[in-house]
Length: 335
Image 1 (cartoon, helix red, strand yellow):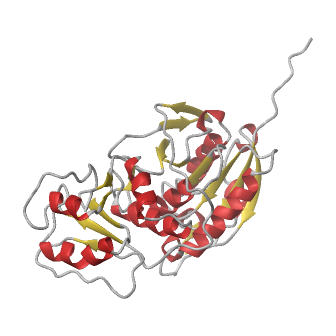
Image 2 (tube, rainbow, N blue to C red):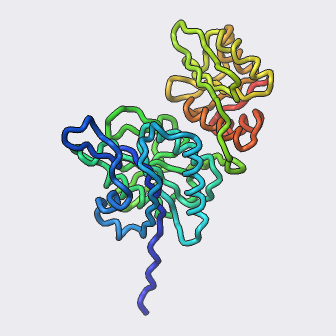
Image 3 (cartoon, rainbow, N blue to C red):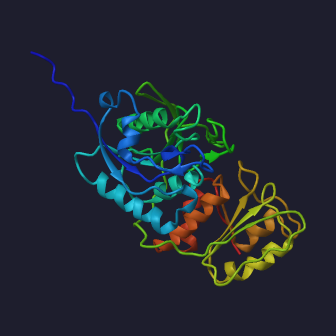
């Protein structure tokens, strides 16, 4: 008896714009969003052998223009698609400018176990070495692969798969700009085939926030500069120097927030590693720990801000958020 062929995976692909959807016409000043989902899908060779695709044209927006409200709207679209039993995975196509933040935002949402892949391009359709078609093909292949079930949201670029919690854009224009400096890449994808190198477990919020809680100022320690907080913050992230050290003015500025029960996260501006208690001078990492700050673990300051904004929006308090950061090797000191 002839073998029964397995049904092809069905993937919902949400198109939002970005460089992957841009062209630069003759005489223009540069790239502008132009290509709709049908145009991008038509550029991908052999797609019909990988998955059945359901395109959703959401918009043509540069990623640097995205808001938290739009990110949550897209998250709800993805959640709705994934709830359909015939959909096996989802892809979000966007610009790369803030992709490490948006991917992590969706990673935090309660989207279930089906694969969710975020993808973009480093070259526009009129530039040499346009990487859009290959990246999109690889992203759809990853979203169709059951190996990525339960791995949270991932980013697929330049043939590599990265977990949304660790991935960072490390170069302005290089094809291989995306790296995971702490845990390393999650896997690889080429010719429609996925190789998974390790496993990850995402942190998920208990509910989908209606809105992000803002403002969450990001205070970065720089040489000889007084910090400023702004009016009525919902929390704060401090990107400290080295292993968690700041001038004492930074701690003095946010201590009333900590004492009032607001979440204040101490991260590092270095780009990898994590802050650790161990420096006892005023403003040193031990002083932050003793003050009751939440230590970020390996989360980048940009991602810390996303977690605070969405976690507070979902109703979490400082203790709940500290438990989230513990997943990344952080935690909270005892004031």
